[in-house]
Image 1 (cartoon, rainbow, N blue to C red):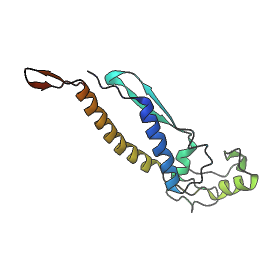
Image 2: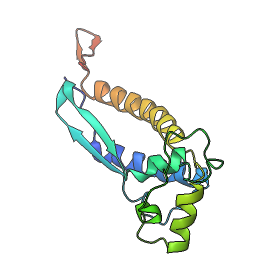
Image 3: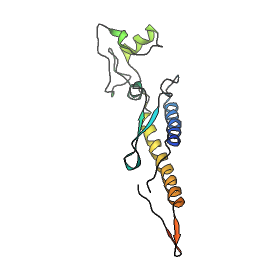
Length: 155
């Protein structure tokens, strides 16, 4: 027997924890990032892998971005703007006004750490959920023979 996990169940769990981590970070998300989470399953059986993906700018919000003029908002960030001819036109974000783009370009983005909290809470929840699913799966496939219970499982 191979344990087959219900990908829809884990997609819902990941989605809930993703949104919770964003909320707890203090990030004012308009839904673009929180609605971007995708959980896909590649392969079957023992080789199955769940892949989590979300909008790339989520990492910039997690780590922050150093500005072209000042890095005080995110001094530890590996990301930053360099002065260039394109200036504020390099700043992504269609919903930002030119004034907001200028502020981001020159002064950076404060970090809103959420990725580590999301992955930690997801790992803990998955351990619990998978453990319960394994027990149920093994119990469902147990059989009695000569007064003993035989359990078989292959993970």
